[in-house]
Length: 270
Image (cartoon, rainbow, N blue to C red):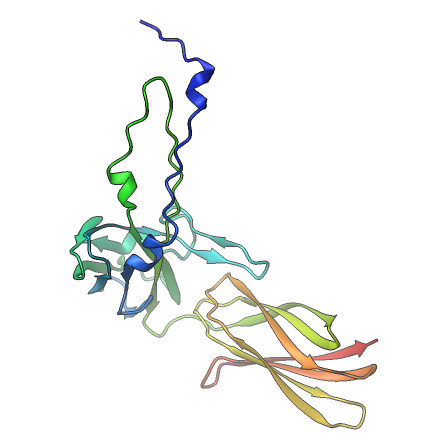
């Protein structure tokens, strides 16, 4: 028998606020990065320890996703295996859901199995999401007769980045894709976008040596970021208070050892 749904069903909304508790409920003492060096047809294993700081048990979901980011601020968590350098489908988890006891810990095991493919080169990566399940979703409220209940929940996830290097293979390359000057509150900022155009991940620290018309130099730092192949980041370098004029800038991204990338620019401060 068909039942008619009347407008009264949308009259009652139950908001389930879960903003503070999930964020503080769990922590990962082992950190948020797993890096392994594995050859084709090889494997590596390990575990993720999850601490529960609350006085009640916590149900936790664990699942892999892809992950990419760009200099314009976009962060995308895609379907496992949807990006060219995803290792999400190489990861096997011992379970997709566990329960951490009150004021205790739980452990999830993982195994990374690299395919037997000699064409694999450089760095592959993905993310293992560790997500507490809000208590309210485990015991949903009972709506009043003739009314609907709509639950709105905020979920705070921990993203563990899994990085797999195929031996020492892969070309390292970095490109500065754009630059611009910005003035704010009497200071001048140089904004540099950098893209990893190679096959291996980099963690470059960026600095700028600025030379005025008299050849006097000043060094300013822009921070240090990890950049996966195909991804990009934005550095903002505080050049301080500058007089109007023309400056020469040497921009350097130092990723350690011999992996140093640079470019020279002429900057006009007006």
